[in-house]
Length: 188
Image (cartoon, one colour):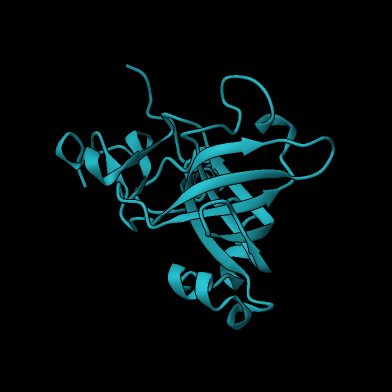
């Protein structure tokens, strides 16, 4: 008969710390979790950003949003990458659902979830990270982006939408997020 291993206080503390670290990871780079979890370098932007700015107000009265850090979600429709400068990423505005859709009870089956209806065109000037410039998971049409940025006064994209200068962004490649249209096949 094998003796049951004893649990020292140190072993229990280490196990609790490991579990806490795993639960705080927020589902990694693409946020596989039931609710949105900031990346470590994103948190300060998220805590300062205005998520309530109404699209039509920003478009018609951009001067009211001077010096305000906005947080908008968008599905990419076009990416223009000029030379060394920031990319001009045109998107359709979407709203984020606080409770993400999941395929089963595990957090790893959950995907960041946005509304399937667009709220208007906007463009963000984004200095793309190296990982987002090339390859299958590059930032491209049908990617999802969360932009933290400020409104460029008096500048509009081709569709008449506002332009934001990104201070920070987060990117989900195609297939790493879902829209509310997936609710029929996924759980809440």
